[in-house]
Length: 419
Image 1 (spheres, rainbow, N blue to C red):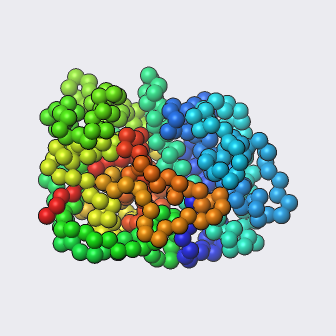
Image 2: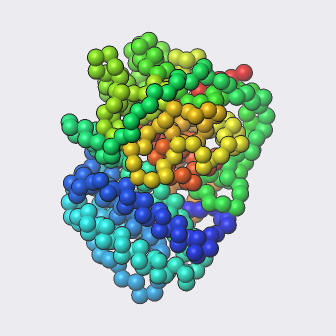
Image 3: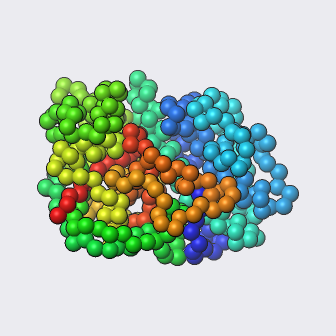
């Protein structure tokens, strides 16, 4: 992972951002017991305790170890436990067995965080520019893990037969169903895609380059729960002609019949969330669907998924800091649109584009270059951020990526069509 060169915040602004990011992570785990924070519900998810420690390991390793003379690690055993996939940093504990790490305890991990926070705070005013850039990178890296914290906690609690609520939910107020999808037309032509301004971005968002679009239209909102329920009722999960071959094999092998966390009780669809199990809101964006499901729905609806270039061309005119995004700890979930094209927040939107490098992309040397480039195989791009994405983290050029079967993130669907 690395940042593209750009404007650097002042030490004072960077210190404030560091404190805010680190504080939000601790707030997100406040309702958890030590057991809650230790268990790993599947290989794709990590224990909350691991997220807290791994993000701390990043700051300790790439800033304190490398730039603060005489710094002594909090615990020499932690790098093996809390490195993720940085081969240059040596051997590490198996990802699939992170849930076996019952010690250190949650309190010990929080003490580790407090120690590193104090050391960063003391060192930051005198750090060289390169080290401050790594602190900034570490903040963006931790924001990614804050979203994973929430989605991994949600998946973990869904595996508990009691389906416990982590936070109490707000009283649901009925919302009028949105009208028919409107279409934002684009006449085609050459557009410029990718990050090219003085602010932070990850390396996979560039270089900025030209892309040729054919005439098309993109929906002015995402697909709703109510519309998805109609897809199910029409036999959407039972009709192979809607599905990609790999998708249909996945449906049959896994017994997929609805979005993740949906169940039907007495003819009423419910979903499990961070506030427990509740009836679905028909007007809210559908979420927790895979690329396979998104593509099948689009085919059923007589449309297709947008390319990531079509999506960016449409979204670039909208405020990336707007919409329903993460501001504080609580039971986040997609909410019905309040009007106008909502390109940011609520759900990450699947595109039909493979996660591959842009023309001219080069991964940097060293451990912090081991992030995006090595994963550009077999995954698809999602755009726009979600209700669990920290506000200010996303951009029109931001490229999230997951494998086509994965759906434990807040993933949804925006349609497109050819003109």
